[in-house]
Image (cartoon, rainbow, N blue to C red; front, side):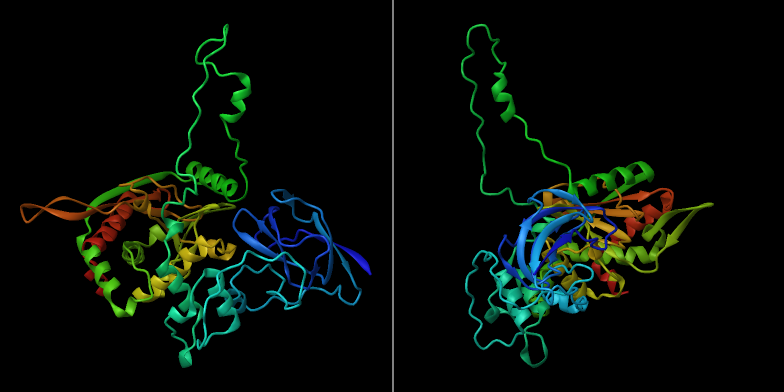
Length: 445
């Protein structure tokens, strides 16, 4: 028997610290290699940390909510010499994806040994008799609360695939990661009125003992810390210029309505964001500089013009602002792009967005319309030259052929790095995006 310390590893993001969010084990629990022992939050994502040892948990060296540096010991294990082997090689990306969680660099996706860990909260038992689906897909369905008998299978031989489960869950749930976050169970909070002031105390001045309850201090860490740093860097290093255009999006709304009614999109969530995404990809091809980046180098700067689009979607999640992106979005048709948006938003909502999903973006969309905002001046995501904001789409009076009619109207705004994009380029780009939202049939070209 031997005691092994496990130090917080470098999760492959170039970060130096992480917060212990939740311990999944307790002292005395038996674990196998690759069993999840805790969740850690870095500046980019929430990651499940697997055990590199098989044995019994000795001591938890760090409490939940504590931020520790990479290389610091966080837990001890009591192991048999034969079991204290290195972790298994990392599983293929597809297998890790199928398992439904982030995989730490250098580790596999979990063993099947029995352990005495605390049981997770019970989920409702869902019937799946007669459904063809692999064990990881059944687990994913249980985790998402999806009844497999209600899922339309698209796999060979009638097998339910991971995409089938994800799309069904997205169709049946709220698009929470790019819409208004939930407030929680308390809808209203009442602050007690001050009592009559004792003699000698000025009216309106609260006793010193009450001041502690009037202000809440929220530590700046994790995603919030990374976001604030990135926004300051972007705002003060790239000269931002914002342009916008008000448009008649009635035909976009008609197209969205037809797609929703189409059997081909029965299991896919469709929204105006889908048309907006197609419009941005189309317009970026016509004005490549909005999809470029300013790169500082020794001896002078250069502009990197990307001939591909990794389309970022700004997502308001319970953990803070994330900007995952769809890789090579320019190669996707309408239906595949809709599926990609569904997966991106559902993954962010479930807290499963990986660092890789957030890296390499080339241009971003922020859908502020879901918050009821008409327009805005968004800050560019670092490493990019443009970000486009879609405002709320609402019925307003609009002049059509000399007559005032009710139409679906929205505002498209874009902020750009003026070092990379000149005024004519940014104006032409926003005009192109607007033209697609006004007439989506242009996408046929």
